[in-house]
Length: 271
Picture 1 (cartoon, helix red, strand yellow):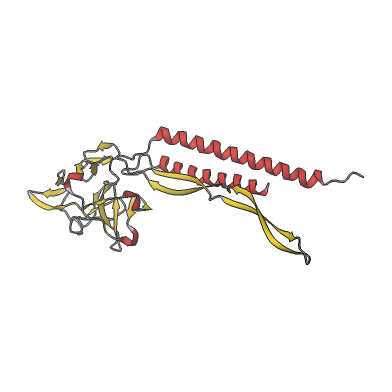
Picture 2 (cartoon, helix red, strand yellow):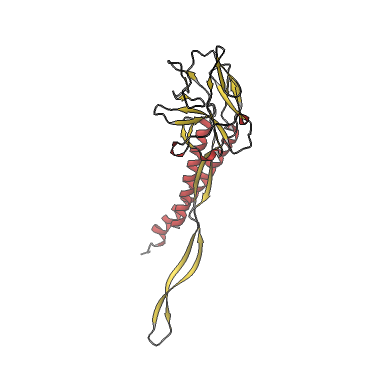
């Protein structure tokens, strides 16, 4: 019976974590470039139970030896194994703002994904799909969080004004001259990226991704990539997770009621 307590509690914890994940997806359904998280639940490894005992050997000086008999396998519950972003292309929304840029994957069914390369204050390179950029006070192209947008050479992009154009390959032109090329990186296996929050990703040990070939993406100026969160499906999944949590809760209450009877009624001696 005590094992049932742990199994039901493990189910409640797993569904609570799934609900938190879905709630975060819902909250970011209007965040540009946001990629919805998806989780996988799996059972804990099964335990093989054996009954340990002793067996007497029928000899003149009888002695006993350890023995065991197979009881069977038991499962100890469920847990959230991993959380991975779903790197599907989001819809493009036209904004007419020249500092807004969107990436369009030309190989949407591939496991790879392309990203803008940005740099934080410490010089670490991060990657993002959120192209809601702006110019800071010094003329550098930055993200909404103040991270510097990088060119193909890993340098910060500095412009004189917002009167610039970006073609589909990422080349930036300003007043008839080329001002640089956006550093568009590609992750061959997008699941290898580590999510940091605020739409940022990085590689393990802060290693750099290679530059993406031009045939794998297009840059759209004056557009933003919308979140790929499916709101209606997310709401359905949240209700399902809530019902599963509620079912495990009722199982836990049933075990608790049985334990209460075992302690307070079964062992009672009538005088």
